[in-house]
Picture 1 (cartoon, rainbow, N blue to C red):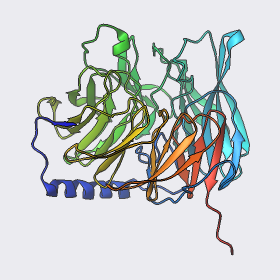
Picture 2: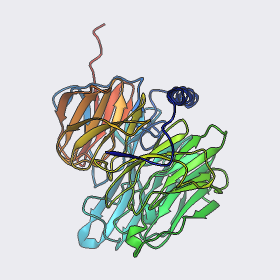
Picture 3: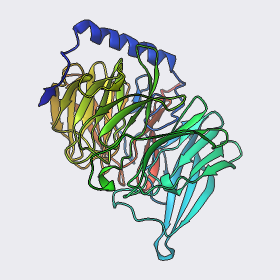
Length: 434
């Protein structure tokens, strides 16, 4: 069921204009097919429409290589210049020590190239059983890869030498462990720091790690800090007014900041949701976001306002079947998502109406991707469901890999790069015979 709020539905031509604007933005930010630089890919939305990875794969089918991985980590792979970068955490329970490391692998062969020691954390805080000490995904920018482990450290590593260029520690009480991934924009490393003890957004100089700006989050109505924490990853978007916005979803509030100086453009109150994980997606002047734990909801809000826009810029809200962890995919006017318990849904972006619902099965945390003409959903049980697009979507195949899927996959050069809790895989269709 969807609830329409505050605004009348946009006219049909507005949707067409939004799609055209999105197409222009996609062209502006086009990248090479061999690059997957941050959480959810080149545009941060999990989409690689120009790619054609296999729809059927497994340990005995369309497997190019499989490389075992040490440690426990839910961070996703990031890729550039034929090198895959991954963070991991080696837990030594008897010693009460966690070793944080950065790994690099050859994307063609899967061979481990480097193991870079970043930090040894002694007596770390406990984390949730479903989290890891290395859940935030790194980000690649120019010759650097940036690794963020929340309160356990932030590191800039030179991709050529493997040397740590700088490191910072920004203490925070996460409650259940780190989760928010960093992004880089215009020479600034941007971090959402929504902990139990404090909540703020900060930008560091990407080349030095020095503070550029810090902005405190809006006041919250919450009895404890547990209901103030969040784990979302920010989004950069330019609205129809020409403003470059930094969208930072958090507990109770979605907030837009000026990416250059951190000044606030607008804020939208979404209720008592907290521990927000899903990364928002944007179409034209509308942002779509999930509201976190308690009862997850899916909201659509316009981004062309100023100040508190709660009563003026909400287009619709859906209050059932929404994930608390997995991010949505937006394509051709439709939103695709899967809730924590394995029910996939498709919603119309203009109205919030549910187009279809399908039970996939299993538990889900990883975000889906869209590659070529298919959607890929991976669950905790190591199953990857491949669906067609559109309002008549169907499950075309279900693939099984060993291990647990908690990390969102990547796509490069028509190959699927998939991380489990045990290994990382490269799947691709065989080359045609010459």
